[in-house]
Amino acid sequence: MKVCFISEAKSIHTQRCTSSLAQIGCDIYLISSSEIDIPNVTLHHLPIYSPSPIQQCINNIRVKSLIRKLDPEVIHLFGLFSLFSLKTMHLIKNMKNLVISVWGSDVIPAGNQETFKERQIKKYLLNKGDCLLTTSEYLANEVQRYLKNPRNVKVVPWGVDLDMFRPVYRRENSEIVRVGFAKRLHPLSGPDTLLKAFKYAHDKCKKKLQLKIAGDGPMESQLRQEAVQMGLTDSIEWLGWLETPEVLRDFYHSIEIFMMPSRRESFGVSAVEASASGLPVIASMYGGIPEIVTHGETGLLVNPEDVEGFGKAIVFLAENENLRAEMGLRGRKKAEAQFDWKLTLCNMKKIYKKIVR
Image 1 (tube, rainbow, N blue to C red):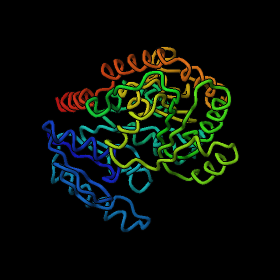
Image 2 (cartoon, helix red, strand yellow; image 1 turned 180 degrees about the horizontal axis):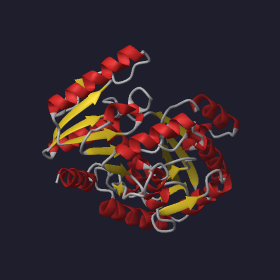
Image 3 (cartoon, rainbow, N blue to C red; image 1 turned 90 degrees about the vertical axis):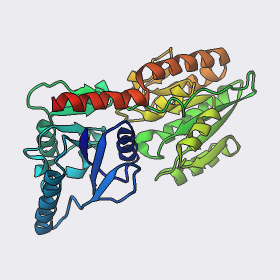
């Protein structure tokens, strides 16, 4: 199966998906504006967008010429970002066997506001796809708003490596319960809500609590200052960005509760990784998260911005060790059934074959 991806090579999702598909027998070519070596993937480094109208015409001709030369069985537009301009969107005109993946931020506008131009570009691109892929039912419903006629949008959840992210033995009756957060320190991830909720739990809980924050971003300095003002300096460990899956795995193994107080989340890969690692997850009741976290079964769901609600959830799980273990076990079983990376690849390959037929 010969597949040509149009995406950014610098994206970790692009790297993971293309290299994995190549390992299971797909012949993968990638057209990207960025240049990064990806194992078993043939990269064609070509600029896709240019502010210069003349250069943009040249770019379009080069990309179209390359695709004709490659003659792929399937073309996979991996997110709308690469073609999100009036100058680039017509690249996909007349493309056959076109699969389009959407991720969330490429469709759902920040602050739920979008310009007329943005909406028209999204409508044009999405209606050109022979098959549309999303990672959640929530996102599939969002995509329907841009389609001229209702269509069957395929939901293929973004799985995780269940051999990498797996449960580990945790000490029983420990006096310290460690709470973890692993997201970019950005307002949409809700790290400020996390900090306030942890302060609430820190003051109320019978157990001693420790917070581990993995990530970096524009809110980091503000959050560190607020932690000092709240008197939490000795209770928080700042880990920075975790570079490799192995380091991330060790992070999940070092905590007892995982937090995801996101203000916006179309799926939530971190919640899947945490569940696969045998952790209960406390997360926002928003977007695609409820498709991952089953309230009362694999974790607890709280309304976004509900600081006290998140704080009470931390206290409840911190003081109930057996419940944490039960939720973690059920979360692992759900990950095995629905979020296995091998299943994700298998479903994508089936979709390719069906389109070609």
